[in-house]
Every structure is written in structure tokens, then in C-alpha cells.
Length: 380
Ligand SMILES: NC(=O)c1ccc[n+]([C@@H]2O[C@H](COP(=O)([O-])OP(=O)(O)OC[C@H]3O[C@@H](n4cnc5c(N)ncnc54)[C@H](O)[C@@H]3O)[C@@H](O)[C@H]2O)c1
Image (cartoon, rainbow, N blue to C red; front, side, top):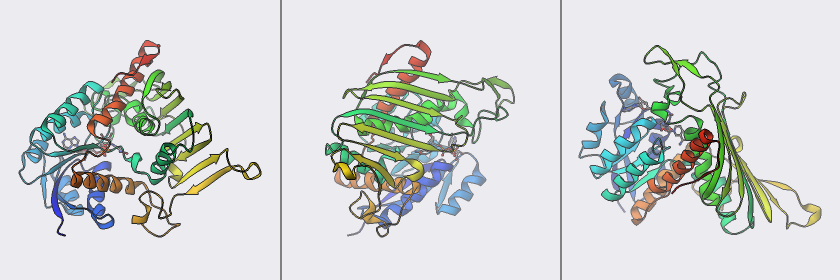
């Protein structure tokens, strides 16, 4: 059967512009999809660099103003892979133009901004999705299935961390290309919206809603030169963020994210402890889960390391042969495949904008609690 062509307009050619372009190109080669994405136009402000990106990835045309891209009649899907302060304006305009909208995380810079985006896609009734790609790691999907099957029993504890070390130098400026994550006006917050948001999205998906929390944040370097103004300015982002929380299912949780954990480049870890067993996952070993089942025969009871590469593991029958691993980039390919499957069947693909807004209700509460010093209820 002939595939339906879906013209993609990409905004941003940075880290995520590359992972998404690769995903749109690869998804139809490994999954049976009714839609065939076509990289149609890419947009960024620097004409020469966006042209070079387009040539490399096979986009036949470029734009230097996202408004032009959104207006184009030949674009079906607008994909937002630009910094956080651009998400709302672009998504709302794209929904208004009737486009399918995919947006990088965090959806908005706070829940109020996200709500405007949710309202826009829902009132325009356009398919939408947020790129919380860790939901598409085969090991994490397996974990989700095992939890739903009750294999861990009642959940008592959830623990997650996201550790990096790239902002420790006080000489590092804030703002501008590559450093927009240090500028609170652009990013919204620091590690809370950037790294913790990933931990939170996965946690909400695996363990349900978070009811209340108490948090602390710290900005270790309080002033940095701003790349765009050249002046030394106050730093508005949080460099580190940690919180204790209670889920609606009664389990207790600890979350931590920082860019000041020397030696760690991108270490996302999570652990869940239940009545019957426990599970651990680690981004550096993303194709494994560590699994403990208390119901195993006592003499043989212990932690198992499960290699998630068999054809009965999530997504893996689409890839190589048992025993061979896949990596980070495949999570984006899975996301495109799942989105296009849902689109063909006329159903939403999670996380929708509305699903992703739940994370911002938690990050808002984290930032509020860090200021108030009190426990805060999570809205939403
Ligand atoms: N899902 C994930 O694992 C993950 C990982 C990294 C980043 N992100 C998210 O992806 C988004 C982009 O992050 P990144 O790391 O790719 O950033 P980046 O700095 O590498 O790239 C940003 C791109 O956006 C372009 N851009 C900036 N302002 C623009 C504008 N006004 N109009 C058009 N283009 C513009 C830049 O030219 C650049 O190409 C952020 O929201 C970030 O939080 C998600």
C-alpha cells in the first residue's frame, strides 16, 4: 500500500534538530508505517548554517524565520527543536495554522505557559506530542510493563537522579548559542526544567501522579558574564535541585539533578522498590535493567542483569539480532514510529501536550517549595 507523505518542517538544527531529523529519516525503514515523513524545510536564524544543515540532512528548502515555515502550505507537521523560550509562540502559531505539532521538552517554561500551548492544540484539534524520549527506551518500556503486571507489587520507593558537570567553571558565560540553558529568561529554570523534567516525566509514567513535595535548589555561581550583553549579570537559574515527595499511590520518592557532579556527563539513574522486588536502570547502560525478585527460590535469589535485546523485548524485534544493542538515537526513532502509528489510527500519542504539562506542575511546585521552604501540593 502506498504510504501517505507527511511533510516535516523542523525548527532548530542543534542537538535535537539532528536527533529528530535522523528519527524522521529512519522510522519508516524499521517500522511498518502508513505515513512516510519527508524532511521538507528546516528553519534557524543563520542562513548559511541552516543551509549547510539542510544540505547534510537532505532538506530541499530552508527558512530563517519560523513564522514563514509555519505559514507554508506544504508543511504538515511542525517540529519544535529550538530553545525553551520559543516553544509556546511557535506551537500556538502552528496549531492555529492547523499543523500537527511536535515539541521538545520542557513543553513551556512553566505550567501557565504550557497551559496556553495545551489550549491551542486542543482547540485546533491538531495531533501533538512532546519529545520525552526516555519513555521510548526499551528497558524503561519493559519496566513499565512489569509494573503494570504487578510484578513489583505495591511500590514503596522511587529514586531518580540526573547528574552532569559541565557548568562548574565560573568563567563559563551565560546566554547565547550553546549556553541558553544558563539564561533563566530563555530556559525558564536551570536543572529543574532541563534534567529533573526527564526524571519527573518517567516517574509520572511509571508510578503515577506526585501529590506533594519539598525541595531545595542552589545556584553555586551567582554571577556570570552574559554572552549577548557582554556584562556580568545575576544568574537566575538553579544549578542543582533536589526534592522529597509523596506519590498518590503512597510511595515516597527522592529526586536530584545537578550540573555540579564532577565526573558525570549525563548520568540518569532510577530505582523502584516494591513489595515483591526492585528494579534499577542507568542511562550509561541503557539496554539493561537490574532486577531483584524476592519470590525467587531463596538459594538462588539475587540481582539479575537483564540484557534488553531479545525479540520479545519492547521495540527490539525491529532492530538487529538478539544480543545486539541499540542506543540513545533509537529512542527518537521509536517516538516517531509510535506517533505515526497513533496518527494513522486517529488516536493521541503519549506524552501529548496535556500529559507533558503534568511535569511542569511538578517543576513549578519544586521551584515554589525551594523558595518557600515549605511542603507544596502539586497542582493539576
Ligand atoms: N529530549 C531530550 O533528551 C533533549 C535533549 C536536549 C535538548 N532538549 C530540548 O530541545 C530543545 C533544543 O535543545 P538543543 O540542545 O537542541 O539546543 P541547541 O542549542 O543545540 O539548538 C537550538 C537550535 O535552535 C535554533 N534557534 C534558536 N532560536 C531560534 C529561533 N528563534 N528560530 C529558529 N531557530 C532558533 C538554534 O539556531 C539551534 O539550531 C530545548 O527545548 C531542550 O530542552 C531535549
